[in-house]
Amino acid sequence: MQRTTETSGPGISPVAAEQSSALKPGVGVRVFQNTVAMLTGRAVGILCSAGASVLLARYLGPEKLGEYGAIYAYLFLYSFIATFCIEQILAREVSLRRHQAAELFRTATLTTLGFAVAGAIIAPAIAPLFGYTGLLRWLIVVAALDLLILPPLRLSGIIFQVEMRLWYVTAIGFVRQILWFLAVVLLAFANAAFYQVIIARTLCGVAEYLALLWTLRKTSLVQGTPRFLATEARQMLKDSFPIVLSTVAVSIYQRIDQVMLHKMVGDLQLAPYVVAVQMTELFNALPVALVSSLFPVLAQSADDPPRFDHYLKTTFRLLLVVAFAACALLIPVADPVVRLLYGTKFSAAAPLLVVLIWSNVPIFFTVVMNAALVVRRLQNYLPFFAVGGAAANIALNLRLIPKYGALGASWATVISYGIAGVLLFVVFGRTRRLVLVGMRVGAGPFLLVLFLSVALHWLAWPALAKFGVAALVYFAGALATRALQLSDLRRLWMMVRNTVP
Image (cartoon, rainbow, N blue to C red):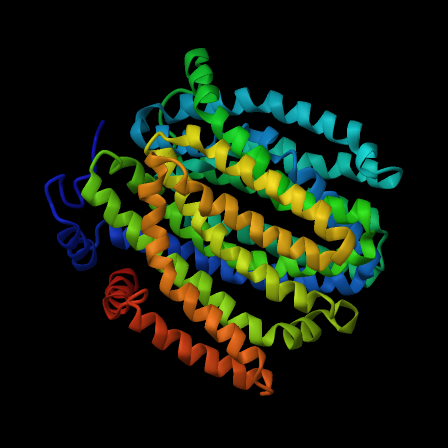
């Protein structure tokens, strides 16, 4: 297995590796460039997505927005079928066997396409069992093209992750966000029917695939002859099967709450929950961007413990600082932000957002842990954590939704995410060492935000004053607990200088 020569070898200390990545334009700078590219595109995309979300909510109203969320939450339960969760396995193998990229991509695409077609048939067939009848059932058929059929055809885009050229993926995603925003604007002005919203979103997915196909042909990054390798297909399925089991469970505890709200209390209560979930998920861009950029480096350093541990600890530290910052800053202003963006009709989303924003912490945690386990070839452990979280989520929702409605679903989400994303990793010895790294890093910021949330709740100050106090106290506390270090800011500045002429 080839190793990168841009950072230190097996005998170097973590401190020296950190200095190396900061002082020369090597892996650290390239990871930074890719992360910045993704986050910049994502930031612009978030503006479009948030604008489309707000406009869609105001245009559809609470009941139709609830139906919209219910459709995509239901199909999300089948997301594991679309690609058989082969993406990380494929990224790992292409990172290690760059010359076989074309063969690996062709094999993965043909292997997973059959699963995707099966999922697109099964999902609408059994939809009535979950309360999706009439027009909703047919709209599931339309939406399945975007969520289930197209993902296998986009697997070749992983080459941009392997090559650390994620700005291509960012640009393509940005094009889709722009198209979707324009589509929602036109639909709202035309007062279009609800079914046209689903068709428009699916057409945006088709446009995204065509843009990816054109970019792949122009860049010619995929090497080798595209052909199907039966042996590789079997190995990919074997390696990804534990991730499939994990993803099935993850899909349950990430979206079953919306399906259960749709079935148990109706779409009027589901609508503010959908708004709170959408606002919470806006923060998920950072862990995905950073870990996607760092994944090839983690894969190549998996057998070099000092170097791997250095990357893992740094990733945990930086991501958890941001996750807790989102909690500290958004909680004091949740109510005025929701009212400003979505109007008083969705004011019930504010208390849900105050609870749901905490779910970002285990989500950030899980993104790092999943990547670490895959590159260390420990993916067989993933189903245990996800199944535990899914079981906890269903049990809590069955208990809390009838009594507390959407607020009960919010607490069920946070608790089950914490169980699956943090606590269960402690059970197994081979995963305990990895997760304890993150828990030690996150202990200080967690206690700090918990104190801030309780203290500010009892202060009768304006929301903006609370926001300012939360920002100052959190930043000072993060520095005091060394969750955020001045060296991070200096390193960030040096990377910016190496990135921007």
